[in-house]
Length: 291
Image (cartoon, rainbow, N blue to C red; front, side, top):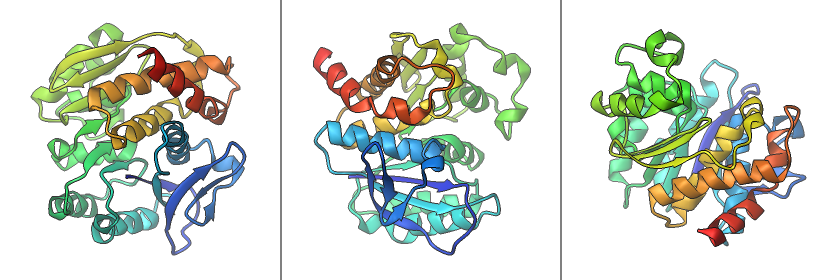
């Protein structure tokens, strides 16, 4: 079973929402919480909708979502961390993905430590804010998979950067051909888990620093202008891993399916990420069949 956690940019309402993620191309909900249409292209919700669509295509049970509102004061993030630390171990989940959440050091460390006491330690995936706090706390090795973009892998490769905005220019300006070197640097600095899925014009999958897959086709350049297309990759790979697919194969399939889903909807820069998500089920089926 898969647990997806993150925050939404809405005011603090003293509650979190936990429950099955449901998305039917019209409505989306997490537990009993309806997600407004204008929020369905936000990182955490795009991730959850993609994972739900992927799980349905694979015949899996719906993922569990965990969300709270947070507009930057940390209140919602604290509730998410608290639930992860105190309650999530009893859900019987095998895979946990952390996404947009404020980097609260003590709360994050408490959760990661607590997973060692679960009946079975979950496969831990981090993207976005969760990836940043993992590096800041020196707990990258406690995770199993990071899904960084080009800026985030530059951040992981820079031992001195406390935030992606402060990455050395010599690293941040590296083009696609330099990504394998950045991956190697991240591992050498102990700033990477066993697996990395690096998103970009060319995608890379790494196992302990060794590049095992690269993906560049189908090429859909306009994806770079559509917000949330990296979040959908993380949602798809989370579902595939939760379904028992070996991590590097899951990463390869997720990257191919995400690109194919975009190609199928013939996007423009005005395309919304949910138009791509609506094609993920078909893309996964076609990708699995061809593989």
